Every structure is written in structure tokens, then in C-alpha cells.
Amino acid sequence: MLTLKNLSKRYQTDEVETTALNAINIDIKSGEFVAIMGPSGCGKSTLLNTLGMLDSPTEGQYIFKDEDVAGYSEGQLAAIRKKHIGFIFQSFNLIDELSVEENVELALLYHNISKSDRKTRVAEVLEKVGISHRAKHMPSQLSGGQQQRVAVARAVVGKQSMILADEPTGNLDTHHGQEVMEMLQSLNKEGTTIVMVTHSPSHAEYASRVINLLDGSVVPETLRAVS
Image (cartoon, rainbow, N blue to C red; front, top):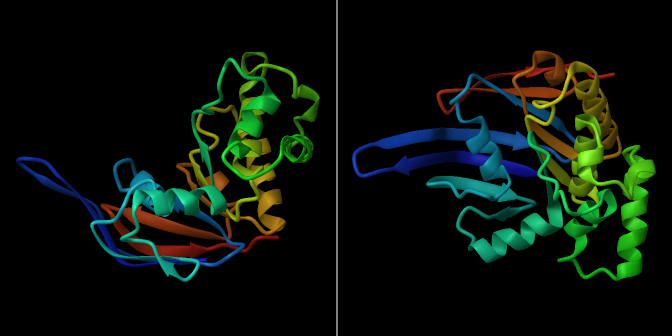
């Protein structure tokens, strides 16, 4: 699905240059579940933002579905993101004034989909993540775990082929965190590619592969046996 070749990201200020990613080489195949781990400040979020085309590399190649997107314009990147990539964040980023179903439908408004088809797709995905009984509720009426389920629904309602998750359980207790991980694992088994940043070794065990970062560089990967 994607390949990074000698990809680097540097941030320049008037006085100092900081290397966030240093000559990264990564291959992620379609249908994989990959966890990215490492200490704070090692470049995990920068790598995820680069994979999600929210940030552009300073040098190197980013080949996504056989296209080198490293030099694409923001408009070109936005079109690819809309079609292929869903995002899940630690903070749920739901709009308080919208109901659950409205929050999820929002992700479809910029797609060429009729209102009736949007309603059908939202209902299907809410059922899939086990939150359909709360469709008319507002985010403030939901638990943290339920809000993250809504965020997952919003990430996949457009039928994106890849989900990028940045500490998706960071604001959840153990029980709800496990529920979200099981849901991501289920989506992966259905064919969705998932790349997840996490600090939790137990949550990384849901992935089939772990990419470890240290000071912006990849250190030896860990393969996991997944049932």
C-alpha cells in the first residue's frame, strides 16, 4: 500500500534545525495492522502525520498506491486523503452541537453521495461499531469509550482503505481501551489497513508488526503472531 524511501523531515527555525525523521525506510502492505512505538519526542506523530499527508517530507519518497506523493500540492494530497485515509485521534474531536449520526455523516458531506445514501451508510457503520442505539444522542451524553466508537465510525464511513490512529485509547480507561482495540482489530480482519501510534505494549500486541522509532530513526522491527 505504501513505501517510504529515505524519507526525512526537518524543521528549521532562525537558530536551529531539528530532524524529526531521519532517512526512514518503511513498507506497509494492504491489510496490515502496524503499531508505531517509541519514547516521547522520537517522531511518532510526525511519521503518522506524514503518512496521512498532513505534513510533507523534506526529502525522500512517499509512494502511496504506486504514486510518489512527496511533491504533491495540498489540493492533490487532500483529494487522496478524502478517498483513502481515515483518522482517529486521542481526543475524539466530535462536534458537541451535532448528534452522533450527524458527526459521522459530516465525514461524507464532501463526497459525491446523495443524502439518502449518506443516511444508509451512517446507519450501517454505527451498527458495525456497536453505537447505533445512541445515534440521536449528543457527544456529551456518551462515555469516553462510546465517543471513541463514534470517532472510529467517522473514520471508516467513507470506506477508506487505511486508518491512521494516534493514541486512540489514550483518554480511555482499561476496559474501554480494550473495546476500542478489539474494534480496530475487527476492522483490520475485514481488510482495513491500520497504522497506530501507541505507548501501550499491550495494545501493540493487537498489531501484526511493530515499528520502533528512536530519535527519528527506525530501530529493528518486531513481528507478532496474531491469531
